[in-house]
Length: 431
Image (cartoon, rainbow, N blue to C red; front, side, top):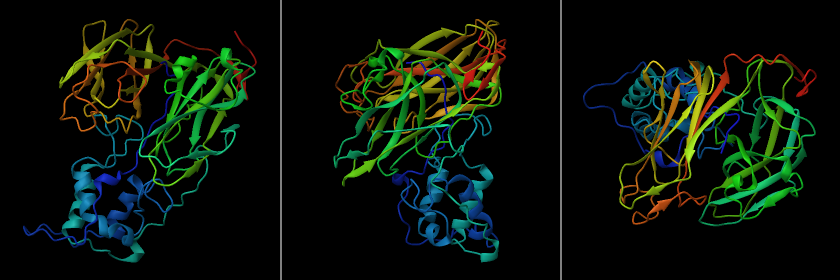
């Protein structure tokens, strides 16, 4: 699969990391901090890092907005942040390396720990920051084109995950430049994540709506376009950069519905933001992956390496990777023409439930001929709690119990200068 644009993702707190605490005991070694209070010190941290998802009516299982909300969870919150489980963020690297990094600073972790040690004092209500207002609206503003499933989809009560593929009705009549795409889930209790694909003009006659038995949309000739997961922020390209949707293409959504005990309905929306102004550079990708996989039963560290040459002087803007249940880790190394080697991207503990896209805060310039090395590792043993069958020889496949290896390097051409005059996504001076 080739990816054309990407989003920086912020993830919600997971239910499993939080067990209610009836009380919080002070530290018997005397490490208490009477000056650290919820209203003055802890609430601002939670507002910045947690309440985007953990607000009343949000996608997380409980709000963390008020003292009453937070106090019963205090000990579990400290445990989760000390073990770096929360907020979920799986790429390594210092803070500031990626845009939208939700991790707490050491100082913020220490503040929460001191508050818990002091038995979680509330403090003065006058110190409480103003509550943030969370609207069920488009994050990036109203899109130029709003696409929807033709009708609400019924998510049936089942104990297994469901992957539904929906073709959207809009056909792009001309080559169209966009500055961003945003997914707006119709039911946050049902939608686990959404992948957006571009269908080629050859599939323009597919009827709008769900297409049954499509787990791998690439079989329809689809190209992966963008992803949404809980808490993610849509990517809006900076001035002068845009992605291209070719003439005759349509967009489609593969929606992963989580298991549910009760019937739920969903009608997820897709917003397209059209580009305006002068476009200098097109968003590009360098794919590194393979369908040749033979993961032996019982293998704890089975590794596959793929290499691709960067075709031009490039400005790398981000990375992501895709594995399945046996995925253990992923790396992307850059081998420069002067023989320097740099690990530019690493997910040391891969989690298939949080397949995020990582956008660099400071893009990396690389010369033509630099080799991107994609390194995937799998754990096919019984120690992998997600492994459906450690005795199986695993090959590439589109089912969850099979495996995939996909790596993506996102870049711009350093020397590109398109000078396209674009209005409403349409170029008036095509070259």
